[in-house]
Length: 158
Image (cartoon, rainbow, N blue to C red):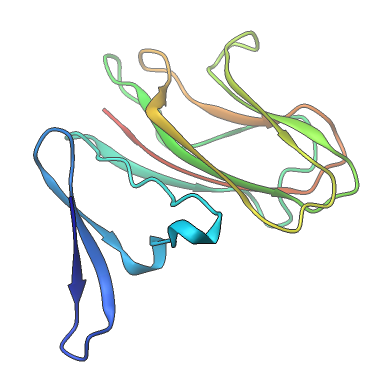
């Protein structure tokens, strides 16, 4: 169940949602997307007692097939990184696969496709969140060089 939160002048400023474990979270109005808009709402993953992270690719996007790390500080031993949502837009004329992987090159845990010359951002919600290895990093990588893919991700470390 969701409850709108409104200001005194009746502007919607957010929605209070009840999570599966009974806790309540506020989804800011900027993240609310109409069901008729054809775009999925961005997942605001509960941190479940962890530390939230937000990732944004470098200016100009990912332009080669090198990996980029989602968070600056790696999880401690016994902790894992969880990715709850990902947004990407490839502005280049070169299409590519986009992957999320763990530290090892063979550790691809999600694979998607970034078409050439995208005009809209693709949003992916992972429910349950993608999970990295114990104390390991999560990476995003374009499989093809020559792309200009802007990527954002949200999740938590616990």
